[in-house]
Length: 403
Image 1 (cartoon, helix red, strand yellow):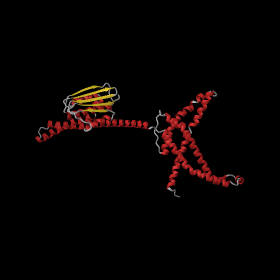
Image 2 (cartoon, rainbow, N blue to C red):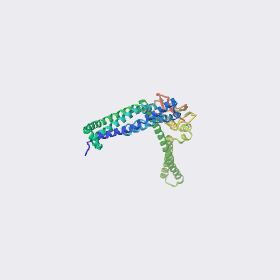
Image 3 (tube, rainbow, N blue to C red):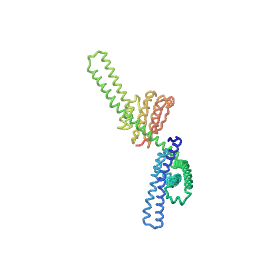
Image 4 (tube, helix red, strand yellow):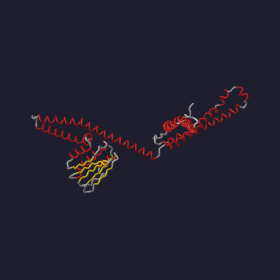
């Protein structure tokens, strides 16, 4: 026999609703016995009729508090597994919502669920009364000649009640879903606050992961490609010094290859330092910026006031900002000098890079400056640029830092 799809869906839905209601009876029915137990012990304590009551009272009281929190997790599982509704995990300090649902609203729903299950059991018994009434002793049937009519009426009433059970169960489940969503769900502001916290945490993780990846690339370049280039340059230098009897064309090729290898080593060194200099981890931001300022092809006055070290990610951003800013000054500003000031004021690391160049720098047009601003914002920093046409140019970056 094939069950029509519509009837099959209705049966599946009713079965799910009844499972949801049946699972709610023990969860909602836990609090009333504990409350009555605690109330009895409190009355005995006030009356002085039991010397053990003041001690015993704390057992149900403690269980009530535990249930207020523990039942919330059980309810979350119940709604998620049987209704597909994912309630948020409430924090410990959000006790008001959990107490209201598990102590006040839950017992009311438990009574309704128990009543519905009792009606279901009575309806099943009434609907099948014509079948099992024959199990009654025959003498009872002789004494009650109208039993067949009564059984028929009971069967009809039971079938009508069974027909109403799916709608009643669905209505009760919908009501519980609405109430749970209203009481156990966090407010819009709390949800937004949690979202901001999650995004901040995930962004911090992404920044740390990117910084770790840059360190890995720097280490691989330093230990791999850079060492091979150094070995190649040494071999070419030895060939240049020892192979004197080669034709001039071959000597010229070796000379050019040796020069190219040394230039490649210099470029790779600059790339490695730009990714994440080792001195930044070992000696801190002051030493790293001193080495950076010494390599810039124009005079740089560096002033630092860093009583404490900041977080590694913040130091990396500060170093990257100064490195890119000085690189832009050397390439585009037509400046004669640059000033770099790095100070820590409480929990703020302030970086100021100024030059006496031609100005006209606009973060909206330059991809390099836009990348700097995005890098600063990745750690909740502030980026400001002042560069009127004709100069001077001043870039100020403020980074929140923790020791």
